[in-house]
Length: 226
Length: 397
Image (cartoon, rainbow over all chains, first blue to last red; front, top):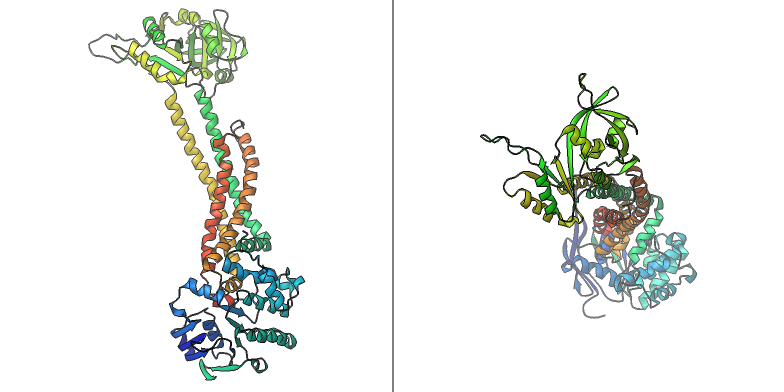
């Protein structure tokens, strides 16, 4: 874990130009996250958590400053290269699961494999990953709207894992789940972290944040505690 | 390899089945309109062309218009002489040559007066080139055969008597008796004579009444082989017109060209009307595709954020448009076959040409155009979907 960190933010700012004036969502943030870390990102709403997640997830680019992920400078990439980074290096887990409604549970997990290899999965990887997150195999042909929240989040985790990403970005992963299911999901994330995944978690639940090794507090677009 | 984006498109179409079906119906109507209109026009063209080509093997030789040449007495009378006829026969070779006398005259049937053309032909020639639908061929001296139109107009029956010439109290007019009525020739004057309005009598009767024995007003040459048309015309021209332009040689090939081109612009015109419905269909496909995109904004956001390429998103929506096009095209193709056949049989009354390649091609062509219209209508919605910002799209509820 020495050498260059997995994620490096150098003096990153994000400014939105609104009609009411400029709004600084991220204000000169410098931050390193090493491989294998379990980081919780906390802060009140409007503190810049979502903006930060979008930057880390390569869904957006900073106004100023530099972000490098897995040794690559995001700003210098083409749109297609960023798309491939999102597909191969990062796994996304959302509060609202965001499964593809037209695909079955299995197909949702298979989907990133198809994106990467441009063909259907014949290796059994999608099924194996789905099983590893404790998803009932019999439900794999169900559509997302036929699944409970906990089951949907397991499918979403399997989908995030299937291309073996280095980073798991979790945006309030337990926010739409009851406490018990939430802790089950957190247990899965902890296991994945011990297996070597870098987990970045956005939450405003201190109980959830306790799972992390490091907590980064954001306020008004600045890091106040790290 | 089964494409997951195709699967997604199929499922989206199935999920919004009614909406997709309605959009496809637009394409069905468009395809049917284009195919049926095209087939209607083509069948009409083919029918008329065939009718016209039955008369194309005839060369008509007429005396050249008399020119008033100063200082010379009217040397060239406007008739074809027996010598010229012999020359024509020589030049025509194996082809049949029929000399015809004709004149415009007044006539009366009972108290009805009319004007028409009276033709004098050898009764054997009449049998060869004309089709008597009712009655019998010429036998007696004062027998006559009449055309279908004139028979209809003056209510001529077998046995009706016609007085020929101007009504004049002091002169007894010659009388002929109708013995046969010709079948209607329509557009196809297949014998080089406008028989529908003709009164046809024997050449002996004609010359006894109008004079002009050994003189003819027209000579028809009936070719055995149409491809020799130009050669025969040339031979006649060289032989008869060697010193001076005394006869005019003509055929109906130019008429066919002009009628065909008129008909083909007519076909284009009705096709244009048909394509308006396809334009309407394109609008409805566009609308459905835009709805599909705007209903699936969040889904597009998910797809983009987890690493779907823009091109893949575009493909997904173009597939969807193509599926609508295929559904509409196939149903439209089948219906074109049925509706096109009905329209052709109802409006032309002849389906003999329907399955000819130049007619039936309108069905696959219509289907193809329908599908292309669908894809073109899907281009902008697909482009819009692929260029969404994933963050904004995800936030869309």
